[in-house]
Amino acid sequence: MNKETIQTLKKCSQEQMIEYLPYLTEEEQNEIEKQIQEVDFEQLKQLYKLAKQEQHVEEKTIERISYVDKAKLENSQRAKLEEIGKNIIHNGKYAVITMAGGQGTRLGHSGPKGTYCLDTIKGPKYLFEIVVDTLKRASQDYQITLPWYIMTSKENHQDTIRFLEEKEYFGYDKNKVKFFMQGELPLLNTNGQIILDKDKKIKKAANGNGGIYEAIESNGILEELKKQDIEWIFINSMDNVLCNFVDPLLIGLTIAQNHKIASKSVAKAEPKERAGVFCKMNGKPKVIEYTELPDEMAEERDENGELVYGELHIMLNLFHRSILEDLADVKLPYHVAFKKSGYLNEKGQYIEPEEPNVYKFEAFIFDAFTRYDDMTILRVKREEEFAPVKNRTGVDSPETATALYNARYQ
Ligand code: UTP
Image (cartoon, rainbow, N blue to C red; front, side, top):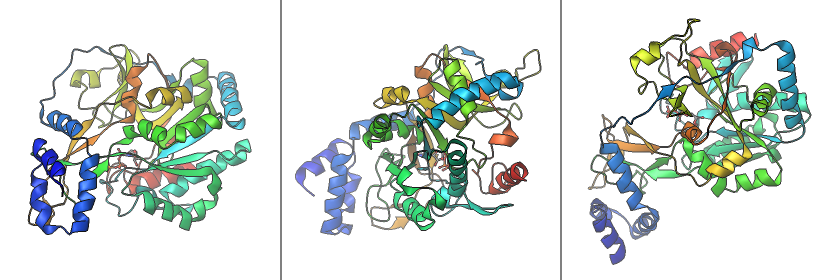
């Protein structure tokens, strides 16, 4: 390792890296040196500060956000809005981006989450296959093969491509599919130090689903969307098996409301449901975490008995391309999670900790909403559009998602 790199490590309080050197081959040392030169240590210093600081509550006003309930739309009104959306899709102005860069830690499946298979009434269905089923339905309905972009992470990029290649894209036109990788950030131990992984490289993790805005820019996706004259882009997750992401009603409603961002929501099942809900914070649309919403607000009901803060964010988001262009170089705030992560100790031994030991930093896609004055919210029925696979067992598990999927397609 050259003197300059050692100086940098000392200056940034990362001297622990020097202790690894005797356990590394020259080649490994060179690789790490290259990686060290790419790390933004100033950013890491700020992130560590964020992890350590007490959460302070800012002065804020929280109000209800308005939404349209799909079930309450009149047929003629709905048909009119759908017509607007259908034209957009049919005329090639619509594309889909599926976020698949997550680690799926709660599910605990080895391999990308989209390769998880459910046992359904239609037979075995991989999560990726369920996304393709919706794309194929759209091809039939609109006589167009929608461009499909898949965001992966460095960790699962190759495995994701290999899987879809092997499965021949479940019959979708592979020329319409493109993969791109999101960014990542080093993990930090409780002393704010970077750590090494089994492969003797700096241990990093994907920078959260909010990394999508930067990733579509840096990977040339935004440019491609522009060249194809795509106007509306739906960004979904791949783990909701009822995800209806080609919905002309949502597009039509957003255009009719003169908005450029839209989300679908479902009504909160009960006040304590552990999920983020929409609100207006300081006059701007925002998804507020259940941990941030005071109890009395979570329980508050209107004159019709509905929860005032009852619109759940379910990762079904629609954007006009101009918004994605606008967000390309915006720095979203990072959220800190304290996680368990294996690492090499200074003697070169790999340690699997029993307790959380590192900070992971993630940006959230919905944190971008507050930059705009308003957005469209379309409330849909949970049993029709929301069946996520998050946990190994219990709530939002393969079991509950399969039951909802079967009920829908029976
Ligand atoms: P979640 O936040 O539920 O994370 O992702 P996850 O990775 O699926 O599961 P856990 O939290 O580790 O258990 C919602 C969607 O955002 C994607 C996921 O792949 C999923 O489709 N995502 C998440 C990314 O694309 N990148 C990320 O860095 C995080």
